[in-house]
Image 1 (tube, rainbow, N blue to C red):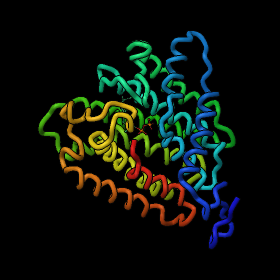
Image 2: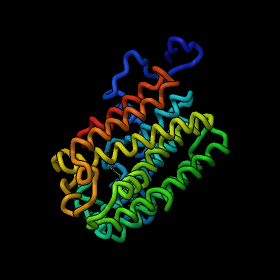
Image 3: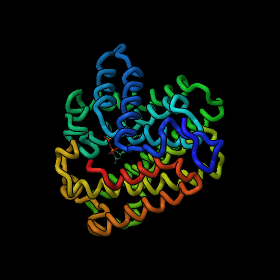
Image 4: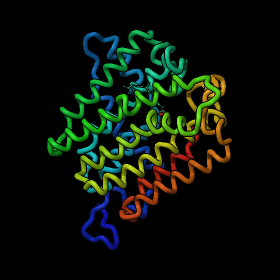
Length: 312
Ligand code: GRG
């Protein structure tokens, strides 16, 4: 443990801030998350659906959502152990949304995380059910596995997450995204609705659920929610940019899909340069929300910068 200068009674996480190194931090937390994910899901009857769930859950990925949850919990004095079940549940939900997003009835993609998509290996029927299995297991996992947190807080996490993934969040964003495809007159307002719901809602939930578990006040939760909304929108803008500028090898999936599908994106509405500037401005606004935590917020600040600097 390290004590921050100027706030002598506040302990930092196990990372000495002076030595903070994002690459090491990401690698370390990714290893912890992946070990828990691996142990969380054992093959049972009927094996096909469990194999399909494990295929996508353990297919790699940056694990940014669980890491945001763990980092926020630690920022507010909580522990990795308190937040790990929720962190893994967030990754289960993210993974199920990718499985469903890749289906022929949605984005129709053949590759994800550098591997064949779930339905290409297991068929559409099993892929749909694997997604359903991961979604419901995520909530069970939080309820059963969370330790050393008051039940009301666990309930608050489940409620917040339930709202974020339903019609008020991911589902609603995906519906408007599908309905907007191929339309020439999609406005910036509609695009922002899609991004904030389809991508932003889950990223917001990662941060706010980590905060709730650590016992954050409403004021702290509101600040962190604003931080997360900004990084969520920036994340999707960068995703749109990478769809144009990155190679399929870098992305681990098909590149150039948005242009091919005539999708409205930030680059298509604003151009590449203005889109990058908007993402940078959102990250700066996000980081401003962390000001009360000073040096202790360095991991979250670094994660925010990583969102615009990433190559996949
Ligand atoms: C959640 C009930 C429920 C249904 C899903 C299909 C759907 C409804 C929503 C689509 C959500 C979606 C796929 C949004 C895109 C988010 C996005 C930018 C994903 C890429 O995230 P990364 O880059 O991927 O973090 P890795 O592979 O690193 O985890």
